[in-house]
Amino acid sequence: MRWIQSSIILAATTIGAGMFGLPYIFYKSGFLIGFFYIFIFGFLMILTHYLYAEVILKSNESSLLEIIQKKLNPNFYFFAFLTITFGLIFTLLVYLILAGQFLNIISPNISFNLAVFIFWIFASISLIFEKFFNRFEVLGAILMTLIILFIFIQSGANFNFQNIPAYNLDNLFLPFGIILFSLAGWTAVLPMLKYNNYKNNLKSFVLGTILVILLYLLFIVGILNSAQNITPDALSGLNWPYFKLALIALLGVFAIWTSYLPIGLEIKKSFSKHLPLWLNILIFIFSPIVLFILGLQNFLKAISLAGGVFLSLQYLFILILERKLLRLNPFLKILIRILEIVFILACIYEIYFNVLK
Image 1 (cartoon, rainbow, N blue to C red):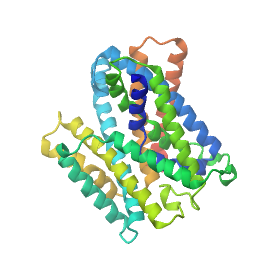
Image 2 (image 1 turned 30 degrees about the vertical axis):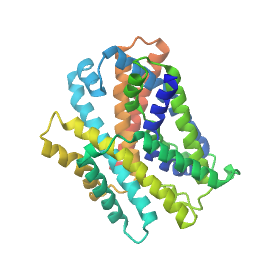
Image 3 (image 1 turned 180 degrees about the vertical axis):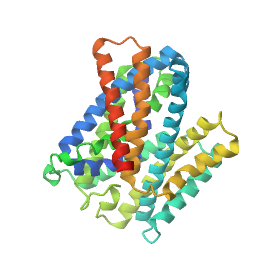
Image 4 (image 1 turned 135 degrees about the horizontal axis):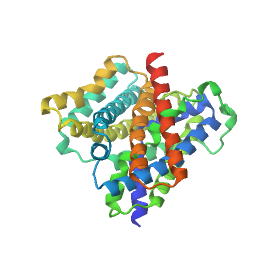
């Protein structure tokens, strides 16, 4: 059935590098807080993505920026453009950092900076010669799923929640940006509608989101049950034979590469209407490595900014569109208002603790 296949599109688009930060934030904040965030965000993503599909159908536009430009105040467009574009650039930065850490696992003798630079060169060449590569979201999701299942099976069946605290209120807000980054899948909504002959089906969003959460929970349990040290990148804390770690890290690098390509091309597409080609190429090729050179080299900080700031603002625009364009019952209107406030406060929080403090 098409609704099942469209749910797979959502899962394939959503599953990504964010999952590698989940075991660490579950460990630092406690499993009860981690479960609370992942299930609440899961419910909110189902609702938000389903209503966003209704917005697309009603507006008859093909992109979030086009809907914002035509349906909201024109002054919103430039801010939304920067929010979406810089969010994509920060996502590439997250991928660079994580790929560098995985390459360090494969080749411990090279420095982390060199590993990042090697991956950036390889990924940049792929972006420049894009016509030789297809879009690889599904392949990346398959590789991520293989990593999850391999780690979960290797970890054994016995899991003791005494290994991690139930909660740590000092890190109450730590999971916000990382879990949002891990579950964000609004870019999958339009492809889902196209595949489903522009028919919106709530079941697709429910099943796709549940698949993602289940896979993430398997990965979290597998890491927490296997690693002697719980590290931000998940893999470096595993005390496994080299060949097992190197295999998982290699799969991780290829999975990250398959996600890096479409995001880099999306940045190129975003600037194509506004900038000459040579400047566009400089931006989508060099912007993530420049951010890295400037000192943004911490995986958790980068993913928290990408999720807590830029994705929060992107979902804020989506919620505003849903509230303005759709006929919602009073409960949904109030819920969306509350979510708008939550995303604004989360954005302020992440900027304060990751930039200003």
